[in-house]
Image (cartoon, rainbow, N blue to C red; front, side, top):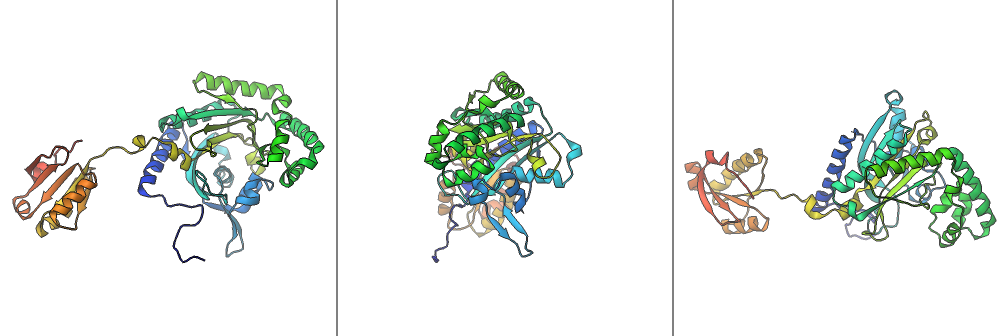
Length: 416
């Protein structure tokens, strides 16, 4: 093991400049979610392993290769959360919220997957998401997509994103499609990857998500889902598309967009971008009417989405996230001035202004440091100012400098 102290592979430190972008994305999402009636929920970052293994499926790559599983000192099998929806669904069941439907939840926080690190993909990554429970109407899907679109507009990246949408149909349509897929892939079983041979037995739709090149060639000629859709499923999807069009949200239907999990139905969607290389999906979601029932709860319709904060932050125009604010430098010219500078800095901050007290070096050095830090004003205090209850104000932008009383300082206008 190397003696070098460093972060674990696939993790990173979010430094102050990173967190400016993260905070902007999170606060924008939180405010938009409130406008749509979503309440914030926070679930633990680890759950009993069954919460994720049962919902994501034992044949999924996430469960097979990517979850961080461990046994605690009490012998409990636990998993760091790889996504947010399952935890929200578990909370809905364990907290007995069935009588309060419909419910809307917003969340954000760290997630964990043992993936190959690359740009936009980390082993500890951050997501925000929205879950709407209790509505069977396709208009709930429309509203959920509208929230996502409004967020992307708010953070200035909607022009770089494309909404791709598809339908998986209802349970009857999916069952019919499953049978068709099984027939097709069974006829080409010898050409399937080992992972997809296992999927063929348990969940053939997952083969359509395969990254194996041989599987991809087979998928190109696989039967299309729309050929198995019944009238109910077609009508549901038509209402979703009509609602999106009514709101003026641009989209394109992508018939290859699927979700391999059995509890997904009807609408699936992704917002993608070409600005992040291979990691093009920034937000993805869909309808999951069977999820809570799969976890042992009552049959409860649901629709939601999740977005990667890391990827959104990479796309955000910096000028949107970094708001200009006044910085006031407090400069003690001598020992007396330094002693008083702590009180002056406190008074400035109590007005809601940003103040930085420069406490080391001679006055000239302090002024240089303040200017380099981007200070707009300097408040200079020496023995004379302390005695006379005054302060010297220097405007770094104009170079103007004047002495004012401490009483005047209480209402002095710091403007940029």
